Image (cartoon, rainbow, N blue to C red; front, top):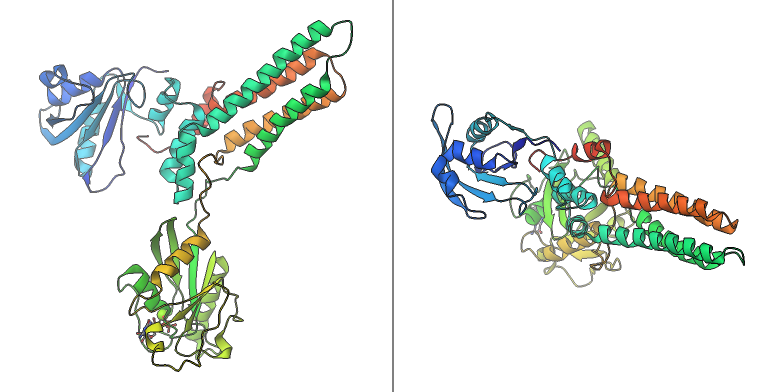
Length: 451
Ligand SMILES: Nc1nc2c(ncn2[C@@H]2O[C@H](COP(=O)(O)OP(=O)(O)OP(=O)(O)O)[C@@H](O)[C@H]2O)c(=O)[nH]1
Ligand SMILES: [Mg+2]
């Protein structure tokens, strides 16, 4: 590993209350001395926040007054000495601090993921955990986040270590068995076959759990229905703000409008569309309706909004496209209607709401949440997200299949031992017990700067 000290901002460029920078390496104490003075460096205490005035080591010009925190290696994220700085979140300050620090001898800008890479190389975490750090940062919903935390906690690492241990164990005992069996009889291959089948089952299950997370797309719910049904009002009510123009003129919404809605399971895209009438009134109207139909094709959840004050046979669930959920709007106005107009029941997939009084809105949120987000499984469950880990498991599986094949043919034990060694190596490379510079390069290049 190169011995240079590295520095990078941890927060994105832009104005914020506070920004954060991280420095890691042997020269961290010198960085403190250069920015805050020798006295500050001498009195540096691990894990104690200090308030200081950072000055440019070159000209002595004031950069910012800020809080900083020192972690003494190996008790730090990277395992090296680490300094975290929390200046005011002005990009100008962040840039000046960065320049002042990287201007020092032996200090350079960190590459993406380099802090985590050092954490791996210094044994603070294994490779599967290091990869899950990126998952924790990029999880788009609650379920993904929980999974990422399980991986970071070592759920996969433990599982894989157990499997690798079992392979080693079988391999060792098989050799012993063969030694003893020597002239008398063949070893009991059937029993070993069963044990290897069990390992095969675990590896296959892990492989099948794979869910690529690289193209993260927020789930999409689309509201559609006849003009004036109350779609735009509903979006405003769900958001709690008057975001979209609403009027009693049918055809108020022309283009579709997208907003973000935060639900317990995560963030979703909610789209309000132009009302779809049986007949277009003009060319513009036809174009609007066309756009509504297009976005509906992408929807993960199609929510049909029906005007609850005008329920007639024509606009019930048979509508095109088929809804995943039906909302009867304007429930506040229904009180004045006769009881004969009952709302058709769509087996729990329908709800009455009022954008005026808020009736039914919470239930609608929960319905969208339930439709778009999977329930998080019990705390033992996790899925793998890394293509690299998937490839390692595929290698392991191929090796297991070759081993089983050999066993069926009563082979030389050396051949079996060789194949099982390959299986073990494939499993071990998941956690990085075996890894190469190329592999590390490709993993950490995808990380954020400063992580
Ligand atoms: N009383 C009451 N009026 C509502 C409610 N929701 C909508 N409205 C009224 O219904 C009319 C149409 O509402 P919009 O939200 O513009 O309907 P829309 O479905 O977006 O209509 P288009 O954009 O034309 O397709 C407006 O006059 C709203 O004030 C409700 O829950 N209660
Ligand atoms: Mg509208």
